[in-house]
Amino acid sequence: MSRELWEELRIVVVDLEHFVTVDHAYSHFRVTLHVFHCVLNDGKPQAINVEEWRWVSLKQLDQYAFPTADRKIIAALREQCVS
Image (tube, rainbow, N blue to C red; front, side):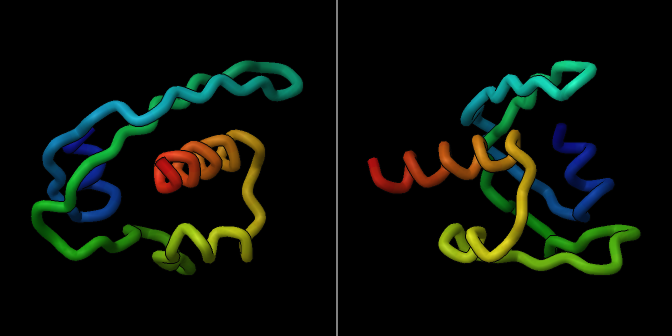
């Protein structure tokens, strides 16, 4: 996973820890998303081969449309922040 983060964002992370698993069903297939919490150790995050992207706070996420599976992850993030 660390290699993929380097390839996609040019960042080095440490302390990968399982955060939540989200099972989601689409009309013709199912997917399981494994979400991890990690700490940025080195590098400035950049999206490689992506024209438009931005980093936003948890509060700002409501300004954007997300598919259901992503909304489940966002809900888990919000739940953790309240705890």
